[in-house]
Length: 253
Ligand code: GLY
Image (cartoon, rainbow, N blue to C red; front, side, top):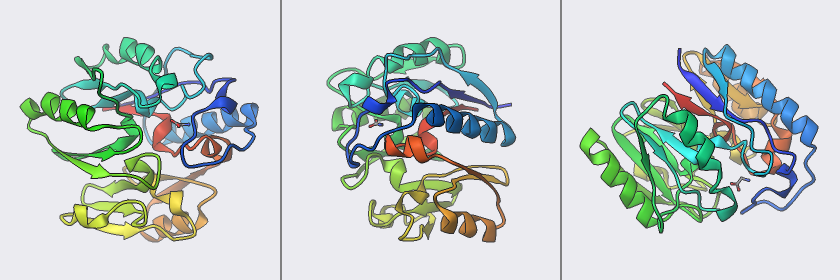
C-alpha cells in the first residue's frame, strides 16, 4: 500500500509565509481538525498514513510537499525558497531515507516541491518566486540517469506550478489557464477549472477517488460528472496559509 507522509500543523501557522494572499487570521485548532479530515480522506483513497516528527517551531511545516519530491528511483530533498522553511527538510530526510536513496539540492538552488509536476518520464518545474534555475538544473542532472527530462515553466501569478494545475489522469490535466500557459502541455488533454474557483485546479486523485475542497462546489460537480467518487474536505484554514490539497502530503508509492 502506498504511504502518505504528513505532519501536524504548527501552533505558529498564523505566522506562515505568504506570497500572493493577504494575511487572514487562522484558527489553529480548526486547521488541525481539518488536516485530520484530509488525512482520513487519504486513508479512504487507500494510502497508509505516516506522520513525520512534529516541528511546532516551524510555521509552515505541515506543507510537507515542499520538502521533498519522490520518484520510484530516488527521493530528492529540496532547498525551499523561503529561508524560514529550510529546516523542514531535516525530518523529511530522516524519514524518507527509509524508503528511497536520497539526493539533495544545494545552494544557490532553491525549490519547493509544489513547483514539481511529474507526468510519466517528464518533469515540469515552475520557475517561480520559490524555485530558481540552479535548482531546476540540479533536478535535471539528478534525474537524467533515470531517463527523465525536465522543462522549466514560468510561474508568476500563483505560488507554485501545482497551484495552477494537477493531473486528473496520466493524459488529462485540470488547469487554471490564467495562471499557467496550457499550450506547454499540448500532448495532454486539459480540463479548465471554473473561473469562480481559480484554486480548484489543485486536486488529488487516486483510482476512482478525487479529493476536492468544500469551497469549490463547481469543481466537485465537474469531477462527479466525469464519474469520480468525490471526497470533499474543508480546508478553509490551511487555504488562508496559501495551501492546496497536494501541499499537505508526500506520496511514497
Ligand atoms: N504558506 C505556505 C508557503 O508560503 O510556503
